Image 1 (cartoon, rainbow, N blue to C red):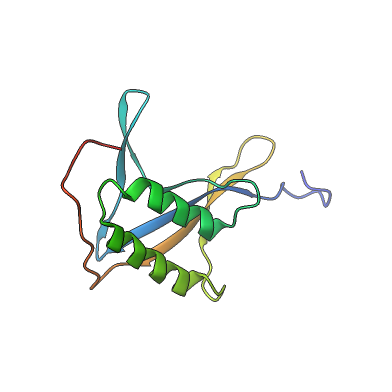
Image 2 (image 1 turned 135 degrees about the vertical axis):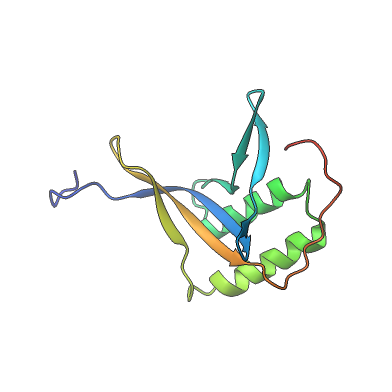
Length: 126
């Protein structure tokens, strides 16, 4: 509990980008511990790192196997334009309410309607 007696504050430990077009959402298929899993384009926020910087770092790391460098750069520019000045805020989604401190993820939604993203040749999962 917090000093005021209420629930402990939510700790945002992850940041992710949610790319969508109409009713489609981009997810990543990853090979983790010899199991294929579906994941978002996101990851752990490093010490001293901003949520948007984390999400963009993860985009560059995870999307380089299936999006062209030009597409990644276009997405980064769009996300910085939308969220970089602080006028638009990420959605904070609760991951876990249990434990000593609840945890969450900062989600940066990006509508890609009308944006032509260049996909690389399909390959193995990340």
